[in-house]
Amino acid sequence: MSTKLSININADGITLTSEPNNSALANIIMNTQYGFDENVVAKVSVTDDKSPTPSDDPLNNLVFSIIFADKVDDSVITHLQGRLYTEGGIEALEQNYPNDFGYITRKLDFTGALDGENDFFETVETKYSATNAEAIKTAINTAKALNVLGAYRKKEVVLAVPATEVEDVEPIVAKRSLLDMAERPRYIVCNEVGNLPMIEAMVEVMDKLNIHLLIDIGNLTDWTQATALAESISVQDHRVWLFWNPNKSRPSNATTVLARKKWRPCTGDYLGQLLLRNSQTNNSGIPPLNRPIAGYDFPVGFRDIERLPEVNLDEEAQNALAKAGINVVMNERFDAGSRWVYGDALTQYDSKTSALRLINSAEITTFTDNTIVGIVKKHLLKGMSSFVKDATTECNRFLDACVAAGLLMPATDLGGRYYSLIITPRADNPFEKADVKLARRPEGCARQVFFETTVTK
Image (cartoon, rainbow, N blue to C red; front, side, top):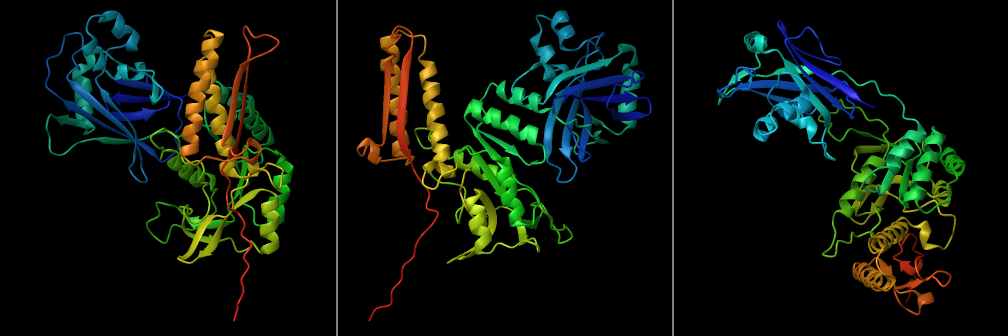
């Protein structure tokens, strides 16, 4: 998906359109891979900094500030600042001013040339005719967007950004985009269970990258429908987690009671808490994956939550949902009061006793697997002896850090050790192939307690 926007400076005002107005006095044309809804505005202001201007670029003294913001809460989406160029974009600037990098960087066109991972616009191109310089100044002033340097009150024109026509992404395209990412994603979230081909494509990505897939099963009011849907998805894998929010709530930014309660998926809140937890790494860079996002310490961040009136979560329902591996947003009573929490920490792994049916154990497993693979790949193409020695040393150092962080526990099958790592040349081809074997016991999660109480004399 590509979005084109053009800020057009016309004789009768400033407009923002999806395509450039070829009859405008000046254009600022921007291309981005992001999309906009109807709640985005662009705030355009221009400041005359009184700097000297060359004859072929008479508007080099005008500094444009373009702020894309959410008109609901006024939060800034992105900000561009720079000057116009006569035409040709960054290519023309590089060709005409090869020895004046400072001149190039002051132009708005330079914003689109950075081409970094977090850049908002792919390209920015400005164009105007030097013969229209005075008319452009007059048009900006008429639009009440022209400021003098150091002015107390800032003049700006606010323009509605055209909503992007969003096209449904084909599963094969989404799959390829995720697999081609330079950085490995750790989580994929699906909130649309009706698109089975997309879920299947995301499962393929999950399996290929050894990451986690979070699925919100949607706005359901019957637990039997929820369990049936879980069975129909039928991905019996520890890397797949299902969530159900059978509740309604107000928007998190609601300021009045007129903001009506409605259903919303819970995976956004869950993912936010997950990433926040992951950011709390120790000195060795190990996140506290042993703590699942569930229970008392991780309340759901929705406002004024209320269960949907048709929903029944009695004991039979909760047992069936747990059997189906569905993590439900529910109200639990604690000694310090009640809280809305994620009531379980189950994966879709089909087992009654395996650690892989627990979310935190599954995360520890994928985290250690992927890190070990990354370390081993770093030492590939060394001499075989150096590879075995260096890879073993660094992998052991990492696994010891995981032990210290509480991610691994002593394993009975390993004679009380926390892990076993063996890296050896392969017997059938010891010159170029090696075996890496890792065994460990991840931390579990206390899901059930059997309470026995006795009154004695």
